Length: 208
Image 1 (cartoon, rainbow, N blue to C red):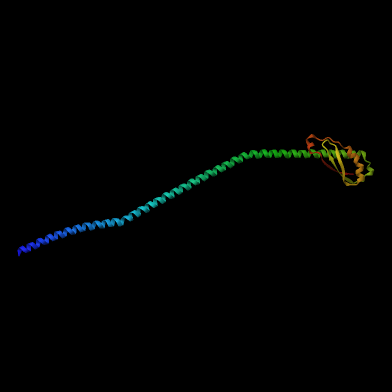
Image 2: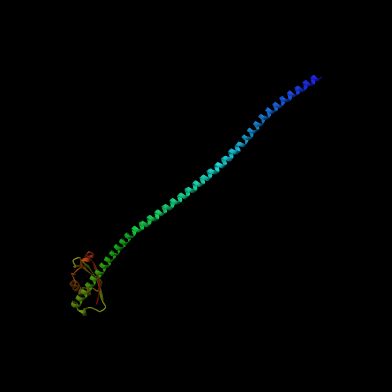
């Protein structure tokens, strides 16, 4: 009886040891598998966090790069504007003497034209005085009625002679009376500075 009980306990102990060993082995492998599974399930989160961080860094770098590009563009635009303003100022400075020279030339031309006109008018006035003087000397005053007038036109040539003496308005008999005195007033001396303006018409109103 004792021998059977002893054998029973020995068998029980052996089975218990075997069960403990099996449980230990199972626990070891099961625990490793769970850790690997946890690590595997957590790794995407870590990777995702790393990706988010990397994206944020990339965004910051991109933003910084864009800001630097904008600043660089603004600086370049500013330089271009300064160059344009400088160029315009230089051109304006260069044009000012040209404008002054042109104004001087134009002013000189105007002075010459005015001087020529003044000389021509003075020349015409001398002819009028000469014609009136000849009429005064050579025409019978009793044949002329006070308040009457005639308008004449004559072409003065470069050499001071005349042609095409014409009555444009007034009585023909008065014209015929004064014609010899008009012819006697020519030829005239023309100033060299105004000769280029001839031949030209000379018109005169002769009042009696």
